[in-house]
Image (cartoon, rainbow, N blue to C red):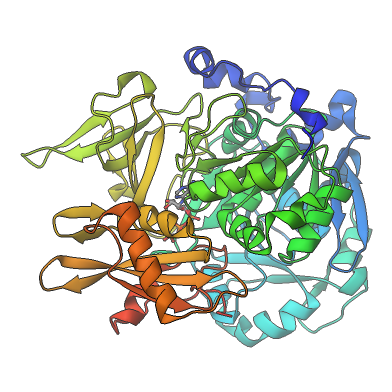
Length: 588
Ligand code: ATP
Ligand code: MG
């Protein structure tokens, strides 16, 4: 493949060490406007700031409809529409801090509603539109939703049946099909309200630590938690968009995540807008051909996606990628799960570009650890902390005290020692609570450190390597086994498309490793292949860590955000209760 033209772009973060040394959040803050008397509002920074700076004609969002329709919104259009929506909320009597839930597909009204809510001083929470009534009810109850923006179709199927269980919900605003009016009893019509609303609105002078966004975690390891984020988070979204996604002024950026997940809000709405770039928003679901076509037709230059999507694209093969001309594409990044080294290399093969893994959580609000455009990528590693973030590996010593083993890149004392990945508290997009669960929140902190619940290690050059979620780690014959390492090894076999690995009680070893494997299309699941894969695992990993049992599956259980739910594989294998399944995607 020829080298894409975009390669000549100079990375924002040229010298990593220097950028870390010289970074300060207060300096970074000077790129934002702020509001009088120390106020700060995400929507002002994302929209009005650019319009006031003479950039109102720039394209902010190119929306691609499911059936080939499209709509362009400039920053100027967004300003007017979000002002109108803020006025609509005012008309409905919304107070500062009230919660506005948005349950729609990725349509322009979603983006307008979220930003308009923020302008009005409300709290926005997006729910993934594929959720069923119960997960919707559960989340709207935790969040005490006062207004819901949804579509007529979704309302009929998912909200009407539970509406009487949501006593706090005062207003339901419906977006009709293709903007047509709706007149269902007990609902208001979005188009009508917007039509009647004024184009001008004075952004509410929210404080930096006022609650702005509510995000539910993916529910991979248990019941989803509602993480509270504040207006100040916009600073981290802007800074990390530049540092970790290398966003430049003239980029065409595509974040494939749905705003129902934190990635789809932090990096599908706020970060690109805060950086004034043009975003592609696709309403459609994952489809390899569709995605390649979008990358080509829209001239996407920076693409932020997830390992699950990369693995699905790998399934259809690199040849399909090479059929498309993607001269603009220059930077690819991924988040959400460990990115197998095989996937990093596949990026090189398919696009002539490696895939940059980065790590963060709903709780961290923004990217914390990343592989950067200008720094060496170590396949399988999450990279190094973004400037402004201090990450560390914590362990308990012989007396049960928690000690910092390794800190920022310059203090790696014990390379490759496993421990809990922690972050020094105080970055702007740090969550400020789990709604309704202050005890759980308090447990996440130890002194100055936020404990992520993930196990990781750090190499001598400061790169962090994901080991496992603390809940997923397998203890086999005195070894701590992270499923990721085993899954990645299996994925190197040409027959394997995906793998999920769990620990199973074993009288001798304590736990033994069991793998569930999805094969590439056209590969037969034979007993021979099963033995071959077990042998392959042993050769790569050694007998102590390699799976002793291996089973073929046509699919793995995943969260709706695309993460393998190992806890469910394990529960089913051991006939244990399956736990909270509200985040489970329907299995194929
Ligand atoms: P829940 O907290 O409800 O179990 P979740 O942890 O999957 O769900 P998210 O906040 O969406 O919810 O995901 C964050 C987690 O995803 C991280 O803690 C980590 O376990 C995993 N993760 C994200 N990015 C990476 C990455 N690059 N490498 C490895 N793991 C990652
Ligand atoms: Mg989590």
